[in-house]
Image 1 (cartoon, helix red, strand yellow):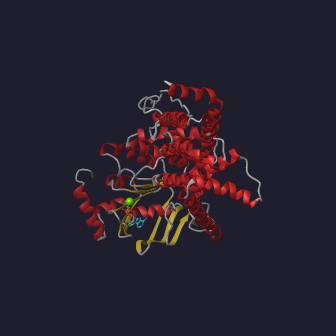
Image 2 (tube, rainbow over the protein chains, first blue to last red):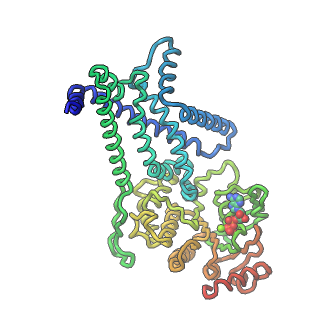
Image 3 (tube, rainbow over the protein chains, first blue to last red):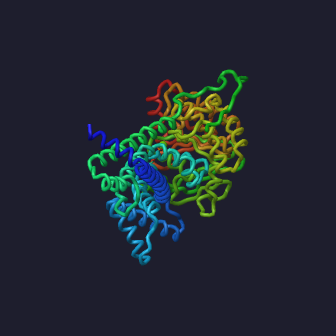
Length: 254
Length: 251
Ligand SMILES: Nc1ncnc2c1ncn2[C@@H]1O[C@H](COP(=O)(O)OP(=O)(O)O)[C@@H](O)[C@H]1O
Ligand SMILES: [Mg+2]
């Protein structure tokens, strides 16, 4: 079977390049997803915060909300490949020719793009939390920010974890568009290998399998994390309600 | 006459065009239990929520020890820590254990140390008979247990007064008793309470005063004996007659 031989040979001959590509792809996708989530949390908290009684702060808040809305619309409404070109070459244009380093550029572009999606995911997550959770916190005097930090965001994080995982998987695949500005991720190396080996189909088949292994592993891993987070279905009853002498132990949750 | 803890003066609340509370005047003194009864939609919850400032009154005053809390200079957090609230739907933090539900507010609002807060939380969880369940999450508890944790959460702030909005209305009948027992013992200990309730036996036996509300106004106010045995306002009479008819045996 010469076809299988070709495939195996590509893997053997080019594995340093392939590994390099996998490393950069995962690095950009991971940091981009985490940074995007941070952007989403910040914008989500700002957009759902009650407007201040202070007139100046209220106007600033509204302006900020409008800026976020525009950001979300633009970055969700245009292809990431085009965003990459505009940002990378826009910087070069503005500085009269100097360019940003490639990997950091890739991370920046993926972060901003993911942030636009995360902004909506987080906002939806916050809105969907029962109003009673806010009122319970307010009724004992907790401020809005304390409520957000201790009560709302932890619940939002759990609820949006499947969507965040999904964004991560999308980013692993979509970093491939960064080859338009020359970022050395997996798809970029596929192009190099193809030009050297002249075996186009075999090369892209190998790369295809690698992408699938990456996304499949990440999906399984994050499912497992979700299950872990949900914790035990049961709890331990300490002592006995009728026996007041029973020892009552306090075990802190992690 | 002991000192007034909370006093409502000409309190008015509108939602858009809809006037839900008109000219409410009311006061609770230290150690008193004030029960509020009335048909659904008469504005009981709105009044309670105004006292806790979950709703902003349209006009009128809410005095806490004679000081108007609707003013802008009021520290809302400190006030709410002093005047807590227990909800019909519990509103426990679903991401926390029973114990942490009772600790968080103390640490955030009262700036107590974690250790101190934990000791105080334990004290009140024991008080409501929930100490064995400190590690349970709200979703793992029955309605009555949830409400007892919610009461412990409010008590852990060591408030001066507690507001209860139909605390037993969402409970299965067999769980109502355990919550009312806790409330009774709090009343005996002299906690100032305002209780919106449909538990007429509780209102009659435990209250210092009873208020009957209808259509956003206070129709009648008096000692429980007078309200239940000898209501003056025809609306009160009608409400009680109808209520007792549909709840025969519970009273
Ligand atoms: N947030 C709100 N917006 C508009 N109307 C409301 C709101 N909350 C309550 N109401 C109205 O106010 C009236 C009194 O409601 P409520 O205080 O809940 O009565 P009760 O607790 O006595 O059943 C009702 O007619 C209700 O529809
Ligand atoms: Mg109500």
